[in-house]
Length: 247
Length: 321
Figure (spheres, rainbow over the protein chains, first blue to last red):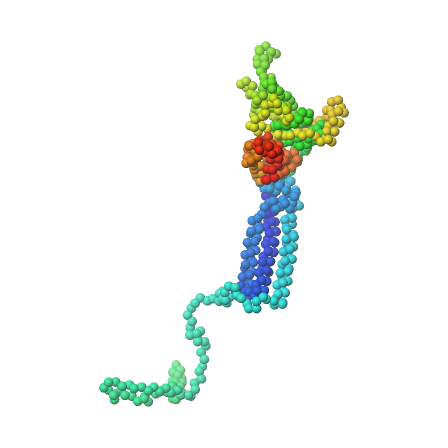
């Protein structure tokens, strides 16, 4: 039981160590892609969506890298780094069900030896240091390229689509618009005193009825602005006040 | 639970100490030959038998008698000759004249001991060899219509002379397979030989006080312990693949049987116990592969012509694994 716990602990520590490595890999991935895209003056979709996509891709990279690393778990990794555990870990794993004296002695021995085993023993420190340095270098280059504003291409290229993010993300479902939305807010039109005169000249003539159907050209003339309109307005006001008075 | 575990670990440590003590006691008499002593102990722990190939005068009898004394076992020696009959080994029915009635009683032969040294087994006729081999395999002897069980533990070490083959009856492959190991005893180094000469020429009868380190019942318990030594699956697979590889080698006419795989694993467990380890290591497998396999494989004519030997082929197989 104690050995099972030990084996689980070792696995957990391996997972933790690989999470650190995967995180560093993801940071490197993010920084390098970001730097390359900046230098080439490429945005993935547009400026505001660019970083969201990049962070999303980095997260996917982190998960897949972590899962991939965790699948490579072998007890032999601990044995290689801890010579005092050589072969005994594998033997304990393969004989967990044995309850005899010799196996018990082996389990006790293993527990004794495993006290000195920590996750530090399986951390590839050189690799991690190299990665941290690389993160630093990339961060510095990213900052420097922003300050200097050095870009290989001057014109921004959109890699995937020209759609505005609001159009992509916040597009409303289609509906009928009313007149005010189409024409905008109503505006008062200043009436002018200019008369518009439209003269229509026609020859209305039927067969055999010349007198009845012959009309003067003057009869087709109408005035666009009726000069008697203010009087009508005054009349309408009177009526309206009278109606209110009756109410 | 913790107390029980510590107690069990203590028992195991005690067994390790006993075995180390056995080696120490044997060293009081024997000079050098550490590997051979270890292999004999392995064979005893595995309840197996040994085929020992060595020139005369190498201290085989001394070694086996010393080990039997230290382990509190009854020792007996059989010198094989062409006229040695099975009944000379197993025993025979004789008339008991001590009582009034004359009854046939069974008089036990030299095989009824715990440790037997069958010297120059290849000089005995196949019929006598068969009687010995029945004892090795079945732990019993048959005389007339009766079978008699041998005492436990039973261990037989048969020797062969590698230089004189005239007038001998070489053991067939099937009978060689019944020996757990074939041990080759080489000449000692100059320093060791010097020490041997000094030790055995200073006194008229060099007989140091040897302590009986373990009892027979303890030895049987140690044999049980041996089988319980845990082994990792990949190491067991390695043992099997070494044996399996002997069947596909062009240099070999025939390879080893599955009994060889069992014996490699068992011998590796015993070696781990002797070395004071509580699990089998890869070096245990590599170390016991040669003595377990060398008498179970047959070199082809071409390989012999090229100057190959069984040990070289086994080394090659181990390297390839």
